[in-house]
Image 1: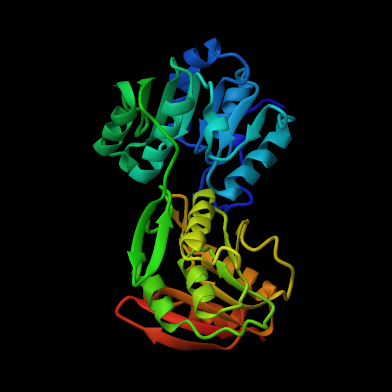
Image 2: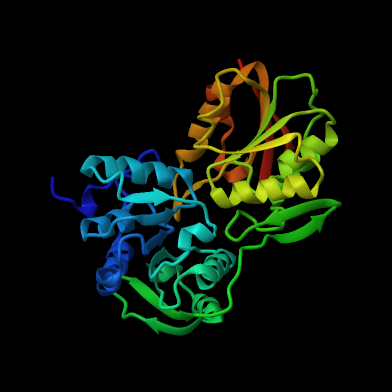
Length: 369
């Protein structure tokens, strides 16, 4: 079977006719990096931020092997693995965390530019510190998501930056001559004596978004004798840390599909002295949690899949929460009031009561039927 970027799937992420697994930016990054990749030996190519495998498998199709890959969302890793299996290329790459072994000695790095400047700063610093001195970084994205500040961040870590011509509303920044870099470090802020730690790219950074603030203000007391409490889509882990601090003896699971969220939540739990009672798990939805294994779940559901808004994400998360809750267990959710999730919560989980509401957000408690 002939490889084609058009044949890639997003599964297990949301799939819809208007959501693609490869776009013009992926194609431009592959074209701009082609000559450099031909000069690279096996094991010298790194891919960071690949959506669903377009960059990795595009490079494999053109002869690359031993490629090291980092994708922040777990759904991206799973999609890459599933797409690779279709062409028999599962042994052509290795998925790794965002740490030195990912980029050590790399001569070519293909990077989908993150929306967060802090995330880009963390990635650029790691590459500059550990990649080969002659590394070339090909960082691309859709023009509508790129800013001049991204150029400035790359210039902090690289002595040369070239900008490609735009093509199909996409552009590539080529960075070379790495200089002083280092390991990513979390940003730290204190909010009402709660320490929040955030690595670049995690939702809300080291602040606490107003929806989560409303949820925190109304979280109930949770009995430590219950099965377990879950902070679903935990982000920086502020809900998990708050639950553990307010309920001595309670065991909390903080789960998110984002690698940077998991790292941030672990750091937040440690900074607040509750790491022994907060287990942080990288998971697709709640797939690793057994049916009827939890008595309390807190959720601030996202409504984006990558850069696309999609209305099917929250209902899918409600269904996962319903599966994992035991009968009588509670899902406490906060959501933008304009999204009107209450009927979905009633249908999917059970009887739903409004706990709090302000000008933008609503907190509800749903009891598993």
